[in-house]
Image 1 (spheres, helix red, strand yellow):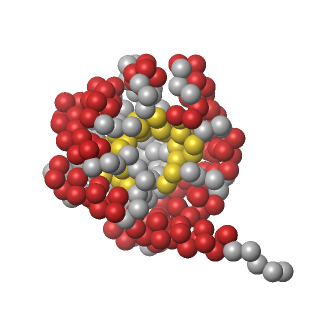
Image 2: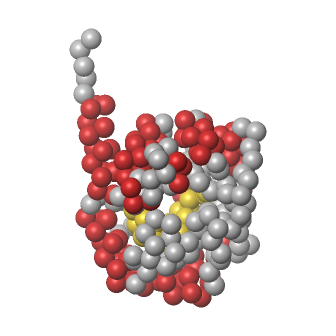
Image 3: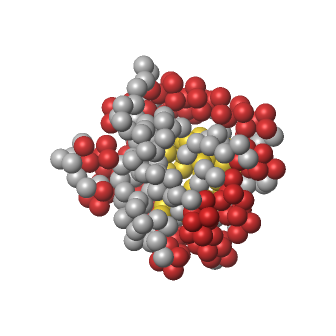
Length: 263
């Protein structure tokens, strides 16, 4: 899943693709590099971020979703607002990627359930503006799993079939660096749910903390290493900024894993 931020203030690219033309070009480039899904977002949810008015978010994402869908891309819309979901679905989005797991807008669950799109349910402790102030868990992997399991059941009860649902433990969303590492190490736990597993850790701050406070642009190696670790533990989808490098690493890793050795 390639990330296209149509925002002026994302932590990783700082507005490089705010203009629709630049965002579409980035998405097409990611497709050429081997992305299976293009995730388009119009609101930064970095730590400390404040909400964007829904009309502004919609104006940012619609032309990008429409153009990429018309080009044949499988498009995901990264939003927590039902009005943006509705507009993006009409423009051709086939997946809703919601950091609130369809809890942030009371109209979101019935909208997604009544459509034929899929959904990614992400865990977040707190809100973007305060989520990193003091995240607390007794057992982060199991607490996050329990919350996602409850959201998965809620979706089933609303009429969403399991094959249209993915869960995402929300690396960096209300978690310390230690919490992130614990969740990734225990990722096989989440495969107990009968649905897809998505993980987004690309360029996240905990990678920098493990490597001399490297800034986002210098976290490629850690991001690729994290993606490999997640796939090795059962992730079906990895949400990344650097599609070509991640695809290449996964291809080599998989090729090696498939070779039968003689003991």
